[in-house]
Structure formats: structure tokens, C-alpha cells
Image (spheres, rainbow, N blue to C red):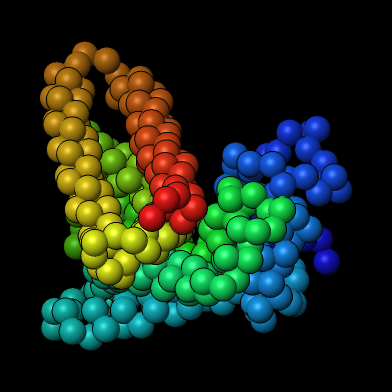
Length: 346
């Protein structure tokens, strides 16, 4: 069983320097590691604390085969939920006498939106699963007192707890990831391919998925947000695991740690909802300006599309950079807070 490759499936691992030597067994003695996301084999070899957590994860004992089962189970489960939502939308919202192709396309678009909304609820469950895992990881005071007297560094103890929280939340993340993946892909396909095609075949409409600059901009915005929304599930696991660990480590706070953790998650959701509103505002404003420019531009349509394509790709990479950077900064900051709260003065 290749432990490093298993961890690559657990999360996107940060590359370690070539000079790193886990056999020296110094990684958790000095005040390291700096990177909180480490290959699974290094964690097990350097931290008996995390090795105990990993041994208790029965689903991980099957190695690569177990990881593939979890991955495919999440994907097939998301597809099954989407199929059920399509059937529900078709039976409940269909107009009598409507063509079957148009009915299925509209039901597919509605089901995709419901699936994306459902993924938000699953993300909330992911947050609470990480919070519960963080409290369970730090609730054994006697074990933590003995660890303080051991040669394992404070940072190594915190990173071991953090890895255990991520290990617990990984399967929840897989569910959120696949719900978003299936929902975003189905929304793009139904909105911009199947629905226009069904309208053209059944109603004689001349519209198509990319007919008109407004629909082209709408397609670009949907695709940009969809890609980042799907990837956000993987980065969220890192940031939320660190945030809940920091909240659970505040044993000497004025409020109970559970309230601190729930308030921390609530504040995170509020900030992210406001940030999403600001992003949508600027994207819509930018799209209106772009549509007005393209409609009044003397450039050929092919050249306009050629100019709009790199703009859409640039926006996607820019959003991806900011969202990933947001969670990276959150992870580093919250792990530092967790270390100070756990090992600082009362």
C-alpha cells in the first residue's frame, strides 16, 4: 500500500523540499512543520498521535481500493440524487402536452439548481463534522498532558490533531465535491446546450446556447463560477478544519468552546456570503459593460469571441487564486491560534 498516493487522494498535498528526511525523526521534535498538509506516511512515521487516529479509521485500512470506493460511491450517489431530482421536477413542474425533450431539459435545469442548493447544506454539515471531530481530538486532557512532556513539539501536536480532523471530514468533502460537480456540469449542459436544442427542435425557435452576446457572457460567468465553486469544496476542508480546531482549543475562554466554534462558523458563512455578493455584483457590472461594447463594436463576431475567451479564462484563474489564497491564509492563521490557545498560558 502506497501511503503517499493514498494521501494524494485524501487531499492536495503540498510538496516538501527534497532535503526533507522523515527517517531522521526530527520533524516533530523541532518546532515544525510549517506546512500543515503533509503526506500521510510522514505523519504516521513522525507522529504516534496521528498514527493512532489513522489506525482507528476502518475505512482507510483497505488502502487504494477503499479510497476508490469512497470516491466512486460519492460520484454515483450524486448522480443518483440528481436523477431523482430530475424525475421529481419533471412530474411536478411539467406542463400538460409539453414535448418530452423540452420537459426533460427544463427538469434537468431545475434539478441542477436544486442539487447546487443541496450542496450548500452538505457543506454546512461538513463544517459541523469538522467541529465535532476537533472537539473529540482535543477532549482527552490526560493524553495531551503527556504529549506536552514528550519530545513531540507543540506544532507537531497541533498538526497531528489537524490531520485527524481533516481525515474525519474528507468523506464529507467528497460528498460536497461530487454534488457540486454533477450540479454545475448539469446546469451548464442543460442551460446552454439541451434546453436551446430542445426549443429549436420542438418549438422551431432559432435560439441556440451561444446566440447573442448576452447569452455568451452568461455562459462565461456560469462556467467561471461553476469551476471555482466545485474546487472550493477541497480547499474548504483545509480552512474549516483549522478554524474548528482553533475554536475547540480555547479551553479558557469566557464562553463554552462549542459556542465559540459555532459562532466562528457562522461568521465564516456571513463573510463568504457577503464576498459572493460583491463578486456577483462586479461580474454582472463587468458583463453589462462587455455586452454593450460587443454589441456596438465593429469587430467581427469571431474576433469578439476570440477576445472574450481569454477574459473568461482570466476571471476563472483570478477567482481560483483568491478563493484558494483565502483558505490558505485561514489555515495558517487558525493553526497558529490553536497552538497558542492549547499551549499558551491560561
